[in-house]
Amino acid sequence: MVDRHALSDTADVARLQQRGMIIGVAGLVVGAIASILQPDQFLPSWLIGFTFCIGLSMGCLALLMTQHLSGGQWGLVARRVFEAGSRLLPYSVLLFIPIAIFLPKLYLWARPEAVHADEILEHKAPYLNVWFFLIRAAVYFLIWWFCAHNLNRWSVQQDRGELGVTEADTRRFRVISAPGLLAYVLTMSLAAIDWLMSLDPHWYSTIFGFIIVAGQALCALSFSVAILAMLAESAPMSTVLRAGHFHDLGKLMLAFVMLWAYFSFSQFLIIWAGNLPEEIPFYIARLRYGWQYVSLLIVVGHFFLPFLLLLSRDLKRRPRLLARVAWFIVAMRLIDLIWIIAPVFNQDRAFPVSVANVAIPLGLAGVWLYLFAGQLRRRALVPVNDPYFKEMLAHGQPAGH
Amino acid sequence: MAAATVPVYGLLAEFDTPAQLVAAAKRAHAEGYRKMDTFSPFPIEEAWEAIGHHDHRLSLIVLTGGVIGALAGYGLEYWVHAIAYPLNIAGKPLNSWPQFIPVTFEMTILVASLSAVLGMIVLNGLPMPYHPVFNVPRFEHASRDKFFLLVESRDPKFDRQRTLEFLKGLDPSEINEVEP
Image (cartoon, rainbow over all chains, first blue to last red; front, side, top):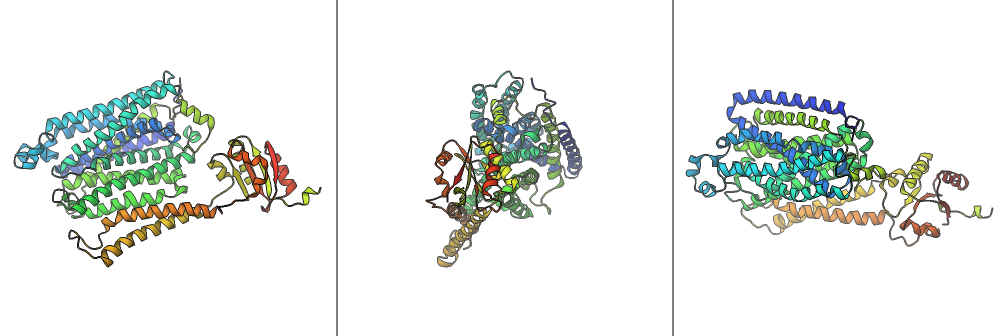
């Protein structure tokens, strides 16, 4: 039996929880006022917030499954953060309910009169229709919940010493994680097509799902690094976390920044070079009406700046500096989602981003953070009964590779 | 003592575990020794840090290589498409930068990687067929199961007797003088 109080960082996590609540309440209050003034911006903003929150939860689940498969000290020290994030999947699913209720307000293909007037939409109707959309969403949620639920349940039992205390017995984590990771990439790709790409039902891009998947992993990883840097300041994590761990996590962040940029640029290059009337409107809409400045901000802030900063070895080994870069990337993830979703709904506005587009997602993310801190508190911060963790402590080799 | 008049290249202390080597290297660094090197069968990042190596020359070489590669890649594309063979392709401008990015990226990686390999070889002074540590017969264990700390005689703090006493205090399994 593990004494979780001795192994949890109550003061720091309580502060995090408080901040989450402040951001959540402030964001939702401002968002509510902005939505009263601009009622048509409420649902798009909610969709941005939902996408951001589910991205955090699912990114955490994907990283959790990855580290069960890959091993490595970076994953052992970050496991409890990933687990706490993955346990918030039900909250993110809850956010889907308003979207499911008001589908026709968000999606053109969900309005029968629009489908009848458009031959292409009629052709796509066997896939893009309300019932099939909802059934698909339910299937995605079930698959994700199955993975997150079992991995967390076994992890609790491992803490109690009931299972997974020998290396052979940790196999069960991998048995879920390998197919789970594959299923995650496929289902999240489809979910990105359903929830985001179909906002403009005429537009398509085959790499779009992967952009969202890479973005979720990057967002969750950066968030986890920021949380770990905070936890590293005091016991118990100050005794476990070393510069080498942050170095490894920083390298992984750099890799995901590059992966996201690679996918995003591939999409742009192919559509720009092809210049086809059914593909190019996505970029035309985002290169005028003021959106071009947001596009430029994403190119610089989502790729060049973090890429150049994360090249530095010294920066990666300093948790506080790395955490600043990490929070910056999390903010850029939100801006990227606003950039994907909002132009569909306010192309002709003088200023591209409405207040609700930012406030409601921040409010929902603040609540997510509040719940996350609560989940983080419930368990010991280190997987003390994990045989690989014991091995890591016994060897005391700080830099994991 | 006649042996004491013969110059030595340095003193080589032998340890059984990586942890002992790292601890010894840290103490030697704290003692003020700088011209040191460690040898082990596998890379130990901590040992490298313990002897106070903060050499950023290779990083700079790789960065420079990457920038040169990027400029060369983009320059090549620009020269081909805008100067040498200015063709109208799909009504796009001659300097169509998005098309040039893949080549620019590949050239960045290529030149940066080559700089890393060549820079490493040059900075290490390779190829180096002779090194004084090979005069110690036990040194062949450095590629098998032992961990070595070398204090070179060109270190200003080096004194044959005092350094020997200091190294003995680090609890090595053996100490050898390295002939030049």
